[in-house]
Amino acid sequence: MHSFTEENYLKTIYYLAARQEGEVTTNSLAEMTATKAASVSDMLRKLAEKQLIHYKKYQGVRLTAEGERLALKVIRRHRIWEVFLAEKLGFGWDEVHEMAEELEHIRSEELVEKLDAFLGYPQFDPHGDPIPSPAGQMPAVEYSKLSEVGVGTEVQVMGVLEHSPEFLQHLDKTGLNLGCRVRVQDINTFDKSVSVQINQEKTLFVSNEVARNLLVN
Amino acid sequence: MHSFTEENYLKTIYYLAARQEGEVTTNSLAEMTATKAASVSDMLRKLAEKQLIHYKKYQGVRLTAEGERLALKVIRRHRIWEVFLAEKLGFGWDEVHEMAEELEHIRSEELVEKLDAFLGYPQFDPHGDPIPSPAGQMPAVEYSKLSEVGVGTEVQVMGVLEHSPEFLQHLDKTGLNLGCRVRVQDINTFDKSVSVQINQEKTLFVSNEVARNLLVN
DNA sequence: ATAAAAATTTAGGGCAGTCTAAAAATTTTT
DNA sequence: AAAAATTTTTAGACTGCCCTAAATTTTTAT
Ligand SMILES: [Mn+2]
Ligand SMILES: [Mn+2]
Ligand SMILES: [Mn+2]
Ligand SMILES: [Mn+2]
Image (tube, protein in one colour):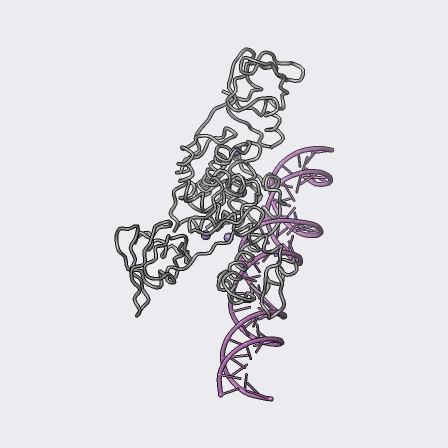
C-alpha cells in the first residue's frame, strides 16, 4: 500500500506538527529523517499527489485527515511493539525504540490487533507515551514538565520528552523510573536545577536539562 | 548489512538446493521469487561478488559456507516468528507464513534470541519444520511421507511438505493435525489413495496428493 | 526598499532492484 | 554433427529514494 519510507515521513510530519505551531518545514523534516532538504522536497510532492499532505511550495506542510490516520496507525504499531519488547522480552526502555522503528512497518492489521490483545490492551508505551486507538485517535494527556513544578509539590513521573538511549540510561542510573514519586524540595535560582526527594527516600539533584524532559503528574 | 532482497534470494537458494540434487538454476529461482530470469541473473552476479554463492555463468549456483550461514539465520528467524504468531497470538498454521516473511528481516540478533527464550526454545515451527540453531545448524530430521507407509502401520503426523494456506486449511477441515496418530488401513492400488484411521477413532480417505505432502513418524 | 541571508525547489545523476527484448550459450532433437 | 529449442545473460530502460549543485523564493537585515 504505502512504502516503508512514506510511512516514516508521515509519522515524522505528525511528530513535528505536534511539537510546534503552524506548518512543518522542509528543513526540520530533513533533519529528523536524516536526509537532505532536496530529498524531502521530492517526497513532499509525492505525498501531496497522494493527498496525504496539504502542501504549497515554500509554505510548509500539514497532514490531511487521511495522512494523519495513516501516521497514527504507524505510531500505534510502533508503541504496541515497544510494549511487547519491554514487557514480554525484557528489553530496557532505552533499547526498544530502534527495533520498533522496523517492526512498525509490518503490514498486517490483524497482527497488531492480536498483539494488542496479547499485551492486555496497554494504554501507554514504555516511555509513557499514549497508544492511539485502533480507529486512529490519539488519547489526550496533560502532563507538566518537572522543571515547571513548584517547590513542595509531590508528583509522579509519567513520561519522557527525550527518547535517546543516553538520556534513558541516565534516568536508570539515577533511579528516576516511570511511576516513581518525586517531591520538589528546592529550585536553584541560578541554573534552575532542582533538588528532589524520590519515593520518600533518597534526595537527588536534577539538572534543568533533565527536569525539562521529565513529564510528571 | 544485507538487504531484504538478498536475504530472500539466499533463503530461496537454500530451499531449492535442499529439494533437488546439483546446482540451483536461474529459472527455478525466478519462479520461486516471482521475478524474471534476467533479474535473477543480475542478483546472482551481485551475490557472487559478495562471496555468498558459487556461480559460474550458465552453470547454476550453490551457496558458499557464508551464504548458507546467512540463509539459515533467515530461516531461523522465520520459523521462530511463526511459532510466536501461532503459540502466543493464536494465529492458525495457515496464516503465519506470510507475516513471518516480513518479520524474518528484522535486523536484531538480540531480538530473535530473546524471542526464542520467551517461547521456551522451540524445536519445530507450526508446520513441523525444524528450527536451525543460533550457530546456524539445521537439525536433521528423517520423516517418511504418508504415501510411503505400509498397510497396518501406525504413524504420527510430524510435518507437511506443502505450505499453502489451501492445503493447511484442508488438513484442518479433515482433522489431520500435527501430532495426530494415523493407522494406514488400506492403499488403493488404482489411484494410490489411502484409507486411514485417525486417533483410533474415525476413518478417513486421503488422496495420494495429500498423502505425499504429509510427513509422518 | 534593497541587499544579503536563509530556506526551498529544481536539475541532473547514482544505486538497488525490477522489467522487456535481444544476444549468446547450452541442451535436446533430428 | 547440425539444427532447433531452451536456458541464461546482456542491453537498455524504468521506478523509488537518495544525493550535490544550481536556481528560485522567502525572510531578515541594513
Ligand atoms: Mn520506521
Ligand atoms: Mn516510545
Ligand atoms: Mn513459513
Ligand atoms: Mn522474506
